[in-house]
Length: 277
Image (cartoon, rainbow, N blue to C red; front, side):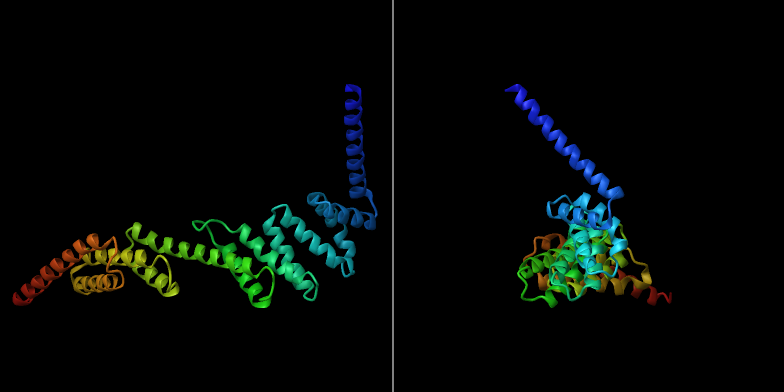
């Protein structure tokens, strides 16, 4: 029994070695047609890394030939399957540009967008790939509204939109955290204008009020009244929009401080006028 097991293992090793040797032989010294055939066979077997190496060999020889359409698609999908998403999106887009009438064009369009999606980082990092994915998914949704992938495309689009929304809010909030209050107010205004129905509206308005409060309270004398009034206006907007907010108590205390500061400031203005200063 043990002898049979050893023979089986040995036989398997020989087969694997032979297959490996054959692959290396075709890769390094095989005819272009043999490399194409083996690359296609390995691709169909799911051995994508080996297939890619063979396709790289044959690509220059098949330029402007009918086989090139299939090669480009297999290269793109092989990179997608091996999680080389940057390369996958690049090759899918090349395929789309080179073969707009291909029977694979719809699938390639979806996989190009999905490659960008899978390459896109978390919301705290650079969002270039996220924006590319959004654009690609929007293009797919517009062009193939009847596709069986449309539900997935819409789901991914919504997820990516929320990711960019969070990134924009975090950026605006960062200005407040670093005490750059004027920049925080501008960034939060832009965020609220660009994301009208955002889930972060309450928090964004509260941060805008806090930034306005700090800017007004710390302002130089000549700009103090205007900035205090701006902060009070922001408070009124927040209270009108979110009367039952959990932040109401904290904000009401600051509102009282603003009114006291504004009253004191006006008294100082009147005093300076009386004294001719």
